[in-house]
Image (cartoon, rainbow, N blue to C red; front, side):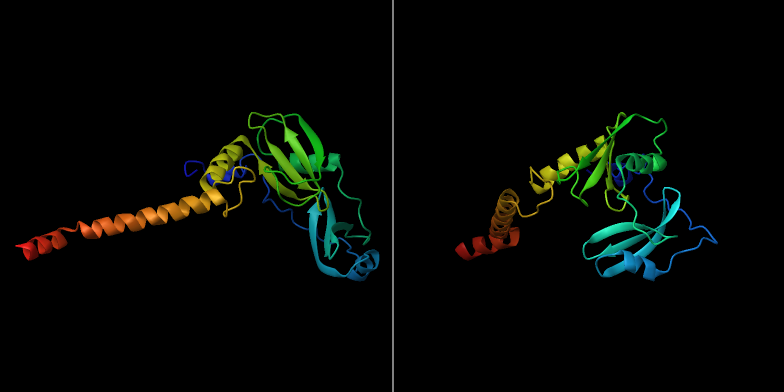
Length: 207
């Protein structure tokens, strides 16, 4: 795993997830009271950002996170498959524009265990890139490539979790850890018994 650059594992060379568009100046923003009136649960946090060329308010409540039009304070519909693809393509930095298919996923898998539901944008490129977009906020949550799958395979072998590749407390790992501890203790005892000074002292006592 050490031979694989972590940036390439994360797919940063294909999808730019860190780019942040500056908020426009002079744009009228609805008062927070308008957003409060449009929600049906107590608000925990509000943040503003650019999303598909428009200013939106990302509102987090006890029931989840939704997007609001920052100018009107009205709740926006959940991102569609077409919008998810537009989000990913705007962040694409892999050069050619490969074909893509978009699928909505409702359940976690070894490839993606993030926010659900989500849109999976699968590109027909040499890396078999899969980009996951949260269905509530429209944020890119994960990028999976052939390099990531290779890394994840060896990571699963490393922690001995053959299914989900994330459990550090598998019986296999615990058994090998305990076995390694006993081997170390046995080696330490043998080393002490065969230490040169101890052997010379024992020989002198016998004489």
